[in-house]
Length: 204
Image (tube, rainbow, N blue to C red; front, side, top):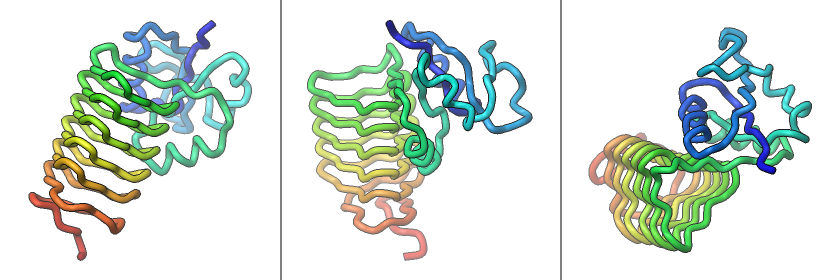
């Protein structure tokens, strides 16, 4: 029996995840959120309490983190040993040989091509393209319309901004930010924020 899903967080990102769960045939039990102003319902589903109250639902529900910040998702995952739900929009194209980790979200019209590996608790946002043989580390966020060429490797916790492009065979280390619309044509080996076409490191 498939357990109903509780979404941790109840903001805009969580709403998109709720839509994915519904459209893929899942059942939503409700939301958990620490914001006292969030109200009693979101999209018609109940707000069940604060995140710290998660334990009372662990036997009957699975969970997904509906929070966009990579470090926050990491902290929540490490704090709670629960059953994590993976949300894949029915319009996403997932090729053969693809591996997707627990708790990851694949949004509408995303394309993940053959033999790509997507880590745990990642966000592959609307219309993002992950080409063949990519390796995407845990807690990474690919924003809408990001395009990754073949055999790209991205380290844990990196955020690739809206519309950014990464050419084939590039490696990007963990905990980086690549700005919106940037073009990455060289390996990124140091943490930091990178922008431009081609990219350069801010403050570097």
